[in-house]
Length: 203
Image 1 (spheres, rainbow, N blue to C red):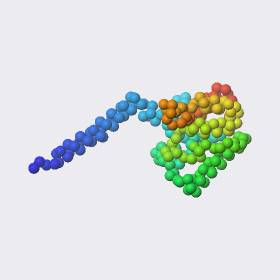
Image 2 (image 1 turned 90 degrees about the vertical axis):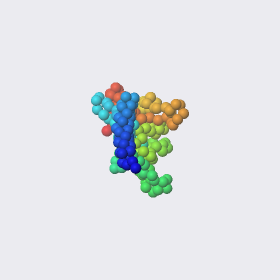
Image 3 (image 1 turned 90 degrees about the horizontal axis):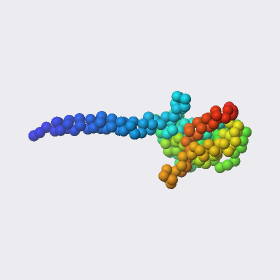
Image 4 (image 1 turned 135 degrees about the vertical axis):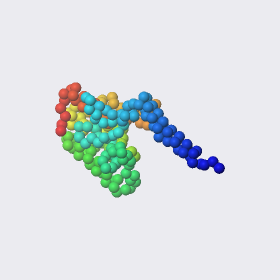
């Protein structure tokens, strides 16, 4: 009777080479050749300094910047190593309290620059996503913040709205998803506009 050890070892070595060496090298090579930016994290650099990623959101808290969608990742917001949502139902008191706190924070930011915004707050500004890493917000969420940013930067709301329109990303293929804007790209555009016009920003 032939020993089963030899074919078992042969299969083990073959699968180790294919799955543990050849496949990872092939995928890495294809990624670096065809999708180098995405494979390396889609990092965004300004004047040689990395300021973030276009694929992973980050928290902005200054009134003069657009705020991202809230993140429920732990132990800190927008933690790519712990991507996930809070999985709290709509009647969960913790979720209700969190939403109220985010609403209060938005109103406090408006008050800090001397404005009162009575418009309805878009849902993506007060609820976290499933991943907790969203780099984009809806156009409604961006436009809601235009008045605060205009006041903080001492520019007109029309200028802020024009930047939103310029930076917006339209639906995929014209009908998938919804129009949106990348928060990091929009905030960088704000800073670039301020540097060009030499208009000072508050605080």
